[in-house]
Image (cartoon, rainbow, N blue to C red; front, side, top):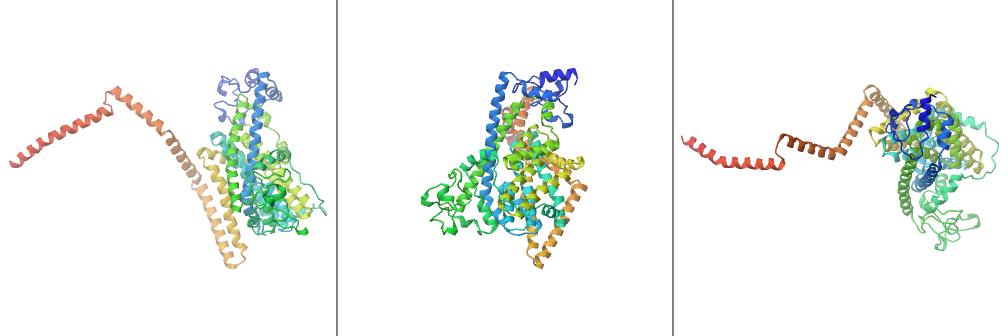
Length: 615
């Protein structure tokens, strides 16, 4: 490192936390390094970021005076405060989604299906209840109860892998206020989507043709599985009790509908608590049918919202005598509250992090976060095992990508590790189920994710495919803020529903529906081919980008129209003063005067016309 760069490092890169430097651009620094908060922060490309030493990182992080340490302590406390409620909002969002979509998800998972339908159902069920951990646990339980086959369970967990990434994509929309942050955050969220979609695109047809996952895991199975204990991560233990005081979803409803114990959610309503006392013992304790206990006499009955077994208390939105619609309303209200709290905490957390990182050189930040890919995968898996949710892991990391603290290249291995970590939930559920087939499905989930990593990550040319796709989607947000919501609706709901509709035609097992489905599939394939031709050969991409640019320009014009009109009026006034032209009022009076003159002259003209006529 040169002497000039060392001086710049000493003076600038150890800037006190929250202190604004007079220099606000890399163009004004001898080394040309960018610091967090610079005006041209977004202009620096990753390949332009210089390298720092670990000594510089340690000095920037640890060498501070008492005042700076005080600011760091306050900032850390603020970040932890908002992070906790961010996690609380995610937990409440998941509970609300389970209440609103639990009955539908249980119905989707209840039947044996063809491979395409199984894939789509797994994705839709996970998108509805916002938790791949819950979906995979239910799938493992269904296989353990012999409600569905191992092969069907494999396709369902593949779909669950796609649906798990919807949460962090929603979280990325919380940074819409800043175009640059939204671009980075949306790219960081969708790199997870693209990787999962690419893995399914390769491994799903391979599994349909060869059943390689089935045979691989079948060779690894033990003769029996011993009883295990359910393990809950420490983050869950901290966040879940508080969220359970507001709303606690009853996962047994989803499992009972999926396994066929009940036909619909109506069997759980109305909610009944013994003696009108709202606690776990009087409302949610299960009847022992072997002992002849009856609902309403010896035990209560709960629906989609239940009480907490550990504390014995019922959540705030639980009510005795509630109907199915009442629970839906409670779930909807909590969904809105959780989204509001999620975005508020996200913006506050981003603000705190921005203040804490102000003045920090990108060389230091990049060095601190630029870990080896394999280490990143291990870190992502470890975090996910602790929080017991890949959605939480990726959702917490997404704002850091939006801020530029974590580069997209580092986000990819972290999300791959999250994919590995989330399979632990299924393995633990398999241990509890005491069933070899359930363990096989859980192992299939693990090796599916490992196979995807082996295909798409080690080779650089393959790794660039999901990275480029994510960056392209991120750049699209610059042209329109509608890209993220449209992407979520189309990718996670519209396309899966269309595929489910097509596959259902072949499940009818009649000649008419099979022929109709075949023609529709041919039509869809031809339509996709025609779209690709238009997109690549007929400048479809350029036309779409031009349309988005026109829309953006129109929106920007409408936003600045009042200021532009005021500016034009002021310029017209200055021009009138300079040229001596009359003002609007004077011009109006002059117009009136000229009209009056015309009216006076008109009779004289009429008299002249009459005289000429007589002559």
